Image (cartoon, rainbow, N blue to C red; front, side):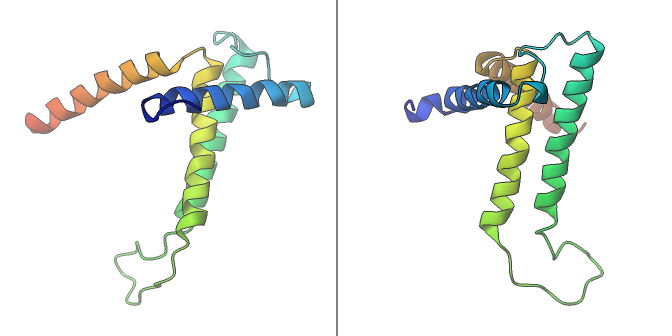
Length: 127
């Protein structure tokens, strides 16, 4: 793996390697990457991968026990490792989705920067 500054590139590379390995091991598990986003199969795949990521986030949320404002007792136990594992699972699906539509780490980072500016501008301007 690369230096600390290459971590996003490393994540994309690891996800892509996994997707290729899965395609070799289980060819029917996914269409060829990158997908044809305008096709029915491509859009079904994107939807499926996105929903899997959302499911993993819901699994992470199951570890949060003290969020209810009406709950009078606290549950002090929190398994940080399990929570983090579920969040990582979600990100794995979301990165796979980006890769499937032929988005690389540079394009993602540029989109991230653009959106970050928008949300900061909104905050400054009392959106």
